[in-house]
Length: 275
Image 1 (cartoon, rainbow, N blue to C red):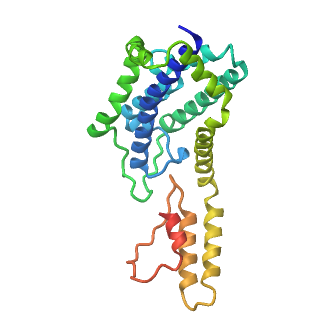
Image 2 (tube, helix red, strand yellow; image 1 turned 180 degrees about the vertical axis):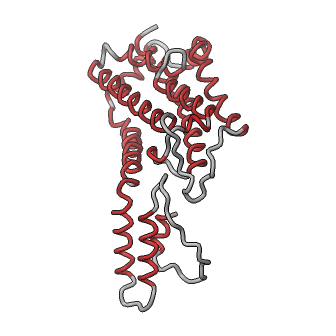
Image 3 (cartoon, rainbow, N blue to C red; image 1 turned 90 degrees about the vertical axis):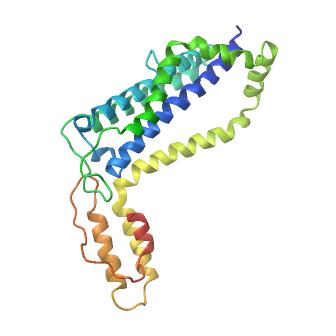
């Protein structure tokens, strides 16, 4: 087998592995959000005490995604790194560095969420009073993805025998690799998509820590928008601002238990952020 065909085979296998393991991680993240109504990692601690099955499935998905031997992710990453080390050593080194950084982030998240003293964002709007373990319908959607990740990691030849005949052979494989190397702009949409995903993750990590600044800026805009009006429009908006700033996932806050009046929202942008 030529190196070009080997790399194409590895890339296709990586797409299959990534679809299975990352899909399981997304479903597990949805389970976490459904229980606590927040993605803020610092709002959780010791969840393994309440949900051991959820903790076990998340640990398996995380280590499988990191490329632990025995899972499909290991086969795909090993093929790609072994095939690209000779022609592209610098890019391969950067890829290995990315794997190490990802491993650190996964381990940090697992330690924060599942270990330590129990802490839950039970007072978040819509959150469950107690963190339930995996339900049957959730397990039906998550467990098969992880099982397939293990099966493909153990019986890799079965998938490779399906993929290999459908790839270009000989000169066709070399021509496909050459075209990708000669036209780097062809990868620009994928690069922009990956960059936007990274930017979204960074903004998602930055926003909760700077919520006061964001809410304050929006409240200032609402105050300017309502300048010139009389009465309690601004006061109502300021009251909601104070209640929103007091809310933090995992900490107690006071809620307004007075019945709502059917009046127009004086600060709609602030209400949208609070929801």
